[in-house]
Length: 395
Image 1 (cartoon, rainbow, N blue to C red):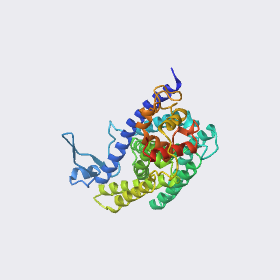
Image 2: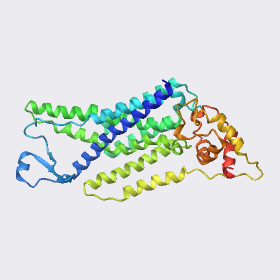
Image 3: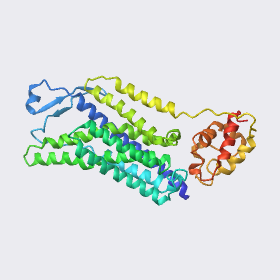
Image 4: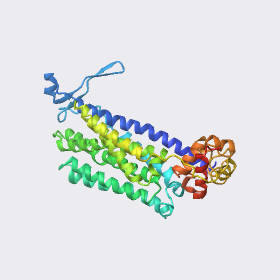
């Protein structure tokens, strides 16, 4: 069976599984933060006597629910106690396998961009893997040192670190690989929080109860802090994960700043919802977040094509010739570099070139992210011809 086809199928299945387990993790994270922030002190004396610090009444699917949270620990350990860690671990494992198939196994295509840095595939893979480990070490160090002193100071320091990494990666790897690795770096820290802090704290609490001891309240406090960090980092990670579909962001001259500003906007929006769970409604946060994101999108909007006076307009036949030489290997009924026509776009006839004229112009001239990694060596003169042809009406 063709290797390219196997890679394509592996990518599809891993992406699907990654999405499924990711939804489970994010859903649980959002639910428990909402639940924790929405609890009210119990009015029932029996609940107070049992040590319940907060409760909530809710309805879902036609049923009534009454979740309760103990101020410390229950007097008796229940026989059936559920932990929530497999969605986190599964999300990281499937994500790492996916990034390996898509980027590490195809580094020369997806990670290396000679126009950005003259590095080889092995160096690109090493940079990618190192980013994941370094991201966790720095995050954990900052959290240990600053988390008890000032959450705001921690956020500023960690945000600065992410910005530095984004700048470094966008000046070393291809824009697409840089964005995905910033997201993977943050996601690695999130999953490591579960593995190294949240679950161990929970197991220590259970172990203390089994010994007949009162669990250390600091265990729960620190685990909760890490859980809240994960909650705030979710939206930035999700944007980084979908960014590979939107080259207008990662191919921008200041791609690192585009990414950081959009992430800041996402954090502000998430902060609004977290406050709202407490009954605190402060619209300044989502408005500020939306303004930041809208301003970035306006800033990176591509300029409209223009035809220079007195300049000859290339013909459809000339543009079709360029497509045959530079694009048909991946966009034709019978491809040679890919298992099938990517995105369903075929450019092997003049009629098809004209049909996809706008997409050809956007990808080869505005964004310059096609051909992929410029594997077929499209020249600047050819891109200019395509731009002039499109600006003149693509006839």
